[in-house]
Length: 413
RNA sequence: GGAGAGGUGGCUGAGUGGUCUAAGGCAGCGGUCUUGAAAACCGCCGUGGGCUUACGCCCACCGAGGGUUCGACUCCCUCCCUCUCCGCCA
Picture 1 (cartoon, rainbow, N blue to C red):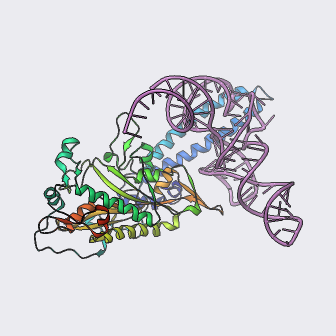
Picture 2 (cartoon, chains in turn red, blue):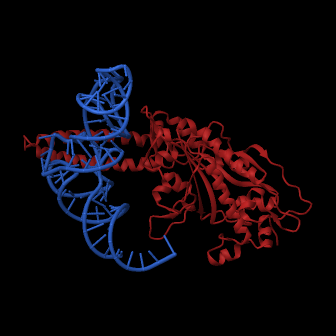
Picture 3 (cartoon, chains in turn green, red):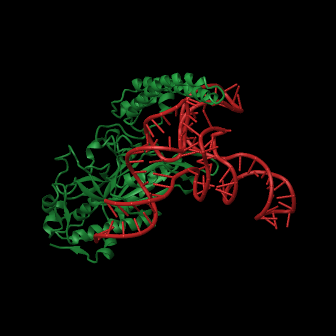
């Protein structure tokens, strides 16, 4: 949610931004509607003031009661009108995208993202590299067939040493983030509509949500929803910022409409797992915190020995709540391509406004916090490990940092 | 799932249908006193919105939403949440 005051004071700015982000809301109409709303608010409040004044008078002058009764009829009509206008304004306001950082590149989709850097040497194999699906099949550590049998296509099992490797990586990543000052959470894996709305997943990604029948609950698409929602309706002590939170949860997405895209292997699935980074910070600190999260993502991949590149995500590839976003794409020798493994978004005050998360300083300074939402690692990183650490016979070497946790150095057929 | 109790400001805790944004206490902030500190005393001490050059004025908010009333923290209804006891249970 953007600040409606900006709409009132500088609606050209809002209009230009909405157009650039392909937003359908008619900003001019919205402004006119808002002006109408404000005018009604004034009328209503004046009438209320009159009503309150007369009500007090009733104690000494019972005749005023009749006047108030009549006044209340008019007031009720206006209040209905005000509510109706407010609803209409809010409905459109919720669809307005966040503002953009100046350095966000133009573009339609991920092919227009701007490469910032490449890090790590790509492995060269004296044999034809397999992709993670082929490796997983051969090693018996990824079972998509039984995932489909038990749940549905798009669900899968990590099996045996694959599961051990995966859990080792997730545990290790959480531990590294805790070392870097993050507080570890175990979070609910369901959240109510208000929480999804507040984090910007509703209404923008309604199609992606698994709703629980008969409940105001949905399976989380990411623990960003529950970690950011954690502080909804709260005012945080400014001195306690930035607050860095992490958690490990499954993430559920319907992936409606994305069949066929990146469908080989377990790249695009209905349930994956993620170690998340969330930061709540003061407004002027969010660009720095955004970089901190990127540095953490890079650190994790470097420690794991995965080559990657960082891209500055273009307008068309960024969700409406985002102000600036970095993706990291890992190198997948089996696919012969860089593919997205992490994403890191500065949401500025977009979520904080919707969830009403503020900060207050000792000197009285106050405002909405900024939030950063970034990946730590996901199952896709394990896929990258499989592809980058494969050997001629289809076995996979375990990255050194994970060996103390797996208890083995290699996964062999 | 069954039975009961309760939701008031940062915390605690009062509140007869009107003078209640709401006593008192604690914490916090400022001051007096003091070499300094403590204590004591004095004052300040909610959020959001609208209007105003400004002093300031107005509106809303006592879990949420309705209702009764000229007027609701107070009465009525619905819902949510918390706590206690019982049952079941990873």
